[in-house]
Image 1: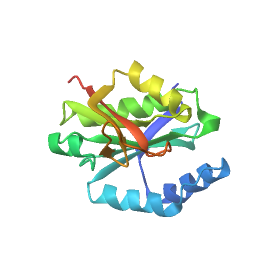
Image 2: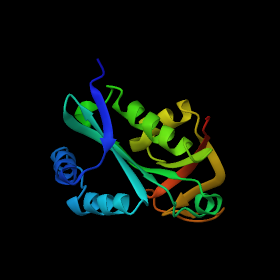
Image 3: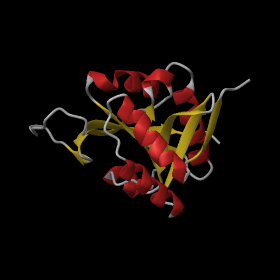
Image 4: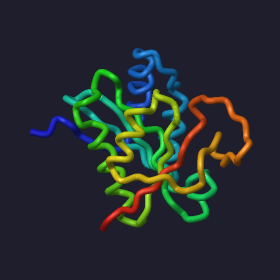
Length: 170
């Protein structure tokens, strides 16, 4: 029996998700999820929510029109804001969310994009993405979505990322 259900975000999830992440010390305000819901109703974003044993356990979003210039130019949808609550990790929830996100993207696109932070906080995600077949997009690292050049200076924080792509099979 599969204990993981993936479905699209509904309004009542917004507060549930915000509170659940706040309980583990993460700042994920209600306004963020209300914006996600609005964007999903407009067709600009798809928000997938995972339930594990009838409890919200994580989510992932698909941005159909990425703001990252190389993805935008090539019309590559981007997986953005992928999170599983700490207490539900190592249960296959992240894998299930990624499988469903990639499946949905593959219906109309051959490539998917994603970015990952460069610090050890993102180590598990870095490993997961490589194992799933994601490779660097060849534009180097970026800060707030802007590619950095040789000699650039940047503060190492959550906005210093490497963008990756994956070719999807039909």
